Length: 295
Ligand SMILES: [Ca+2]
Ligand SMILES: [Ca+2]
Image (cartoon, rainbow, N blue to C red; front, side, top):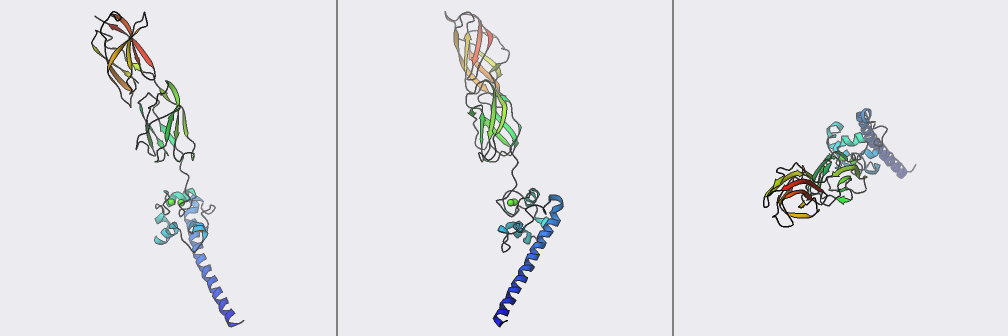
């Protein structure tokens, strides 16, 4: 052998031995990793049991954030479990448990699918619904009742609650509720079949059930809606409607409890004292009760 060749060979051997030593060291970290986690999380048989655990693309010349954290910890796995070394939103131990790389931000556990825990089941136009559950994501999605989009206020959508208001006119009866979470298309929408029933207005027993012209009458009930409706007195024999002035109309958006006030119209040759049907109508439906117009 020539001198130059010997030198090259020696260098090559030295590099090979050096590499072998360092690979051995890295290999022993991987062995330690499996000693730490295999019993509980079966890491030895998972993709985590590879150089990629600590090295981007398996290139042992580089360290990923999990390896950096491991080195900084003095090589103690237990002390970096609650850290999220790759900043992907999942702690190192969550990733190890799920079999995803704790040093690769593009690899993380699947988020659990959205789940609905509770939804109020009835209401009307203006009803505010607070839906609770989990996995809705923090980005505002969409809620559709029947075919109508519900209004979702700013900040009314969180990972665990969605508050929405029924704004569009929807016919009385049960409607499917469909919830779309972001990113759209990534997970199928949640459909609650007949999840929300739009209610016709309901009246409590009238008290009083009679009044003289000019008297303001208060009426309570439910599901009047937040949009002012109309009040009539219907002549039961002719079917003619006498419109009444409505002085107030309100509904509690959360409970549906409602109240309105109207004024008994002045008498005329077409509107005499007697027994009428008090007709209350909103955008959803109509309800009526007997009412007597006194002298
Ligand atoms: Ca992580
Ligand atoms: Ca990760």
